[in-house]
Image (cartoon, rainbow, N blue to C red; front, side, top):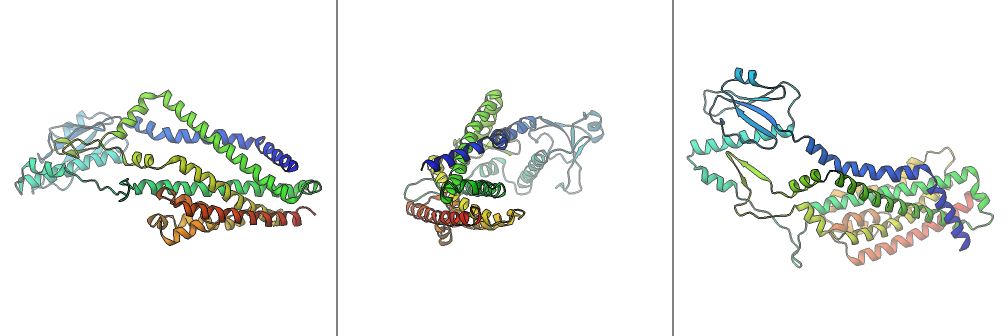
Length: 420
């Protein structure tokens, strides 16, 4: 046991001393924090209100277009006059008259860069809505109050568990499950390859042969695999802590900007209805955003515990397999194709992910959860939808037994190919 601890400490310290470990440990939280803040910053920078000069020869839209935070409409008597009054970045919306009462074309002129797709959609949506209302009112004599009351109604479909009454949040759980599965596959292959490279280095510099004279091969292999696992856990913990600190720092540096972004996210969306903006429901109903509801409904401590369990067991399995593979590869062999071959069962789960989330309790999903080579990814993919305790227990037991068998085989290969 003492020799095993010495090997483990040596491998652990050796990896912590590598500059690449600390570079990744610092850069990844910074990148994640930037990715978190970038959409908010971009949204704030892009909130400059555009000015659109409206020249309406039909008379249907004059004065009816509603200005928003994104666009301000200003009526003009003629196209020539609008061009004279237009500033550098102003847009001109020209709606020509036709012999028929229903206009077919509208033109949005710009002198600088093209207007954003969001702005174009806003203008087009208002034009379509106003034209729709004009047809209903003029042709079918439908009163504005009637179609406003119809369009302001809405129904929200709630999918709930019949026994508990809890919302299902299928969309949110689907995204969370796929993200967890992808993270699991990346983590297993990333740290498994680390073991593989370590074995290849020892094969080249003959360190294994020197250590093999004083320790058993299984001790050397277990020390290497466990040390990489400890390094992985250390790096994951540092990533979580540093990412949290970076995000908190960014939020503290611009509290007003992030408070406004959160307020916009929680606010109910308004639908432009001709000359007024009406709430989707007649009675104001404060509904929390579905994404926030779905994430709140997921028990994050359980997800973290199950993720850690399958990561450790899956890492022991794939780390042992890749270590055994590294003992048999030639010095100049390309290890990438073999690594992809070993990790192909995990890739199968990602390929079938769309089908599996549609039937998370189906036969195929259950079998992939129980098979040791696919269980780490399949279990995490199904976890947000609810994973029976017996499947977790049986899957973890089979994964542990397979990992022990793989470690035994890797130790034999270690002894026969590295320690001569």
